[in-house]
Length: 119
Image 1: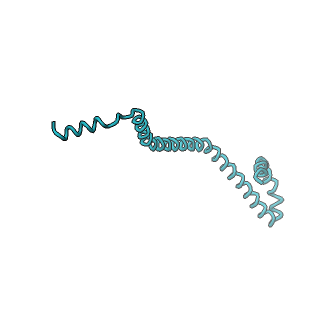
Image 2 (image 1 turned 90 degrees about the horizontal axis):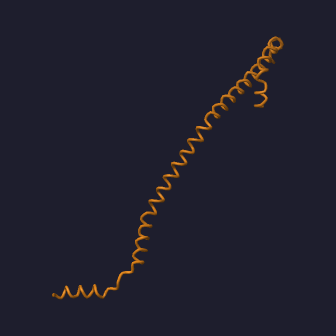
Image 3 (image 1 turned 60 degrees about the vertical axis):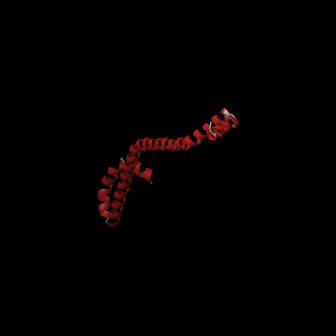
């Protein structure tokens, strides 16, 4: 045998045996460090999807209420504008006010609650 082969055999014979528990622990730590960022990124992705889904559901549930509220508010503001216009025209001409007030008020009577609710 050559001298290099002998020294290699001597080195392998003198090296202490590997500790299997230590190697398993090192492998587990390595896998943990490797997979931890993947786990975090996946969690953030799932969280974002859940938030987007919840936001879409809330928007779908509130959209009809928003449209109804906007329509009701617009109707009440139109009634107030009509009342203001009639009051401005009626105060300058007393004869006009006497002739048309009863008809105007009877037209608004059915929606009086809506105007009072807004005020």
